[in-house]
Image (cartoon, rainbow, N blue to C red; front, top):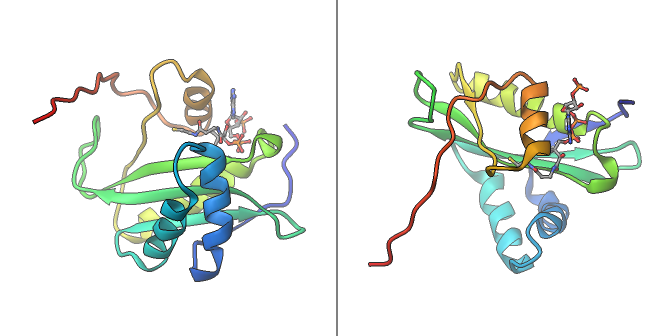
Length: 150
Ligand SMILES: CC(C)(COP(=O)(O)OP(=O)(O)OC[C@H]1O[C@@H](n2cnc3c(N)ncnc32)[C@H](O)[C@@H]1OP(=O)(O)O)[C@@H](O)C(=O)NCCC(=O)NCCS
């Protein structure tokens, strides 16, 4: 892996377009307007933050979202920071961008009193699991999600 110079900053009002573009790459089926709205909410939220990674040319290449939750599977402290979203543009992976985003999110979480950081991945998403493990996460459980229309 060759790390690149990456700068990570807290999502602000001026980042909505970049945030929405990267979200659209991750979830192309959802409307861009949802992500623009999400970015505006996140930019001023308490207990919830977004981070944007940019390269030297100022292009935004990755994002992550972290929230404070009361509880998380396998964790014993509360509140606990939870990695709600983590995405790096496909052509910029394995360069240290994801690591830099996570470091910024951890710093934010510590500043809010958290002592544990939790996350999840889809069953079978081996690359995402390996990235988490490489950055120090430990697997604590495998779950099945269910739905009942009422
Ligand atoms: C997961 C993701 C954000 C990682 O971003 P990234 O910029 O590639 O991560 P980094 O380059 O900082 O790598 C961090 C560590 O994870 C490891 N890693 C990353 N991707 C990996 C993979 N596919 N297989 C094995 N290890 C991997 C790296 O080797 C590195 O460890 P090292 O420093 O010991 O070498 C990125 O792959 C991505 O956007 N994936 C699609 C979306 C996704 O799956 N998000 C997570 C959902 S929970």
